[in-house]
Amino acid sequence: MEADRRLPSWAVARFYVTTPIYYVNDAPHIGHAYTTVTADALARWHRMCGDSVHFLTGTDEHGLKVARAAQANGLTPKEQADRTSERYKEVWKSLDVTNDDFIRTTEERHYKATAALMQAAYDNGWIELRPYEGLYCVACEAYYVEAELEDGNLCPIHHRPVEVLSEENYFFKLSEFTERLLSWYQDNPGAVSPESKRNEAIGLIRGGLRDISISRTSIRWGVPVPWDPEHVFYVWYDALINYATAIGYGSDPDTFGLWWPHVHHLIGKDILRFHCVYWPALLMAAGLEPPKRIAVHGYLLVGGEKMSKTSLNQIAPGDLVSDFGVDGYRYHFLRDQTFGPDGDFSYEAMVARYNSDLANNLGNLLARVSTVVERKCSGVGPKPDPASRLGAVAAEVYTQAADAWERIAPSEALEATWRLVREANAALEAAEPWKAEPGPQVDAVLGDCLEVLRLVALLASPALSRASQEIWRRIGLPGEVTEQRLPDAGAWGGYPGGVRVERGAPLFPRIAS
Ligand code: MSP
Image (cartoon, rainbow, N blue to C red):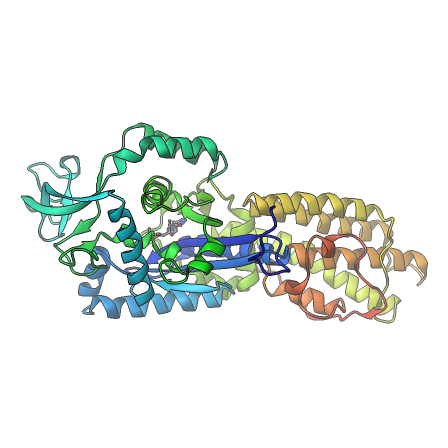
């Protein structure tokens, strides 16, 4: 990594991580939380690695969808947005999400940045006014293409005839970016992951890009076009710009220059076209670099279906937190859902994972070690053996876990981490220190297991936001887990020994299945 004088002296690298901004027509559900909790775990990991981290999430508050939801609820769009964005903030807080900023697209800073970025693209000649003729549903205030209509040219929502309507729209000349986008993909093989999604994006570009309409005159709930305020930007084109607004585009060039383009966008596969095709092109049009990385994940399915308001299959995070706790919640989604493909959510699988990994494996290790230390070592934790076999396992586990966090593969990182937990439990069972007389052999195995607990508290802390600190405290370590710096703190032998170990209540009480 090249040295950069603008970085804080302690920082190793910059890590700007974003979630999509969520529409405020709908309440937060576990699908939204999946992206946000993953981003949070990555932010926590990178902070421990000493990186300078900026973690952004927020809400997408313009557009017809929101205006309609407001109308249905008897609210103004702004009232609807205020209420729902507050709910998002509360849910993120309840899941220990450590975002550095929360952007709302109705904020003044966002209007300014959107105007500035679009003006730059306009001044560069990439936006122009064109007549647009389309099939319009007045009730929807939206255009349809013929293929979307029901027989008889009926609107699929209102089942009423659409009208041929023409208005003038601003168009972004996306078609002229085909070659530049393809060469960006070629030069940056890691920019979009996984590979299958990168190929999908390249396929969309190769399939032929059409210029896109980016403004509307038919609605007022949006960001006005700065050079022609009769128009507002179509919701997606202000939404994407949130990632630039939040780091000071158009108002604070130094901060913007510090973070851009070191951004890692986490998105669901439903919004690939916008992020992997339109967004890089729009940035190029404004004279900016495309994002460093876009990581695309699949859907969280419930009963094999995507959650939606209409299927009535949405699950609120709070319902699961009350059964599993914040740690149980976060651990399940990070460990059991592979980042990338679709995954099915099941309550039974969540119970099984909680009981096996948290209650039985980690919880038991802590309980057994602290009980035996109390009985055989007068409650004072012994030192680990520098040459222990577990030390070699720990080194392998560290390498695997660090690599997996870097690749945005939390399930692999946690799987590797739990190997260490299992091996420590096996070492305890082999040595049976609870049966032995106090002495060097008992000290050796307990010291090693305490060191494993220290390392697991560190490596699992992106997932276990609370339990990791509690383990740290019970095994007698001072300060905060999150203040430790990797890789140094991840090396075998850091447990000092000679500190008091506390035996407490079960950390993860078993859940009846
Ligand atoms: N507002 C746009 C995004 C604009 S970003 C510049 C939007 N919002 S959304 O609320 O509908 O969904 C946003 C994201 O929520 C999805 O891309 C995805 O990351 C996440 N998810 C919503 N439902 C999901 C599942 N069922 N499963 C996994 N993620 C899901 O699109």
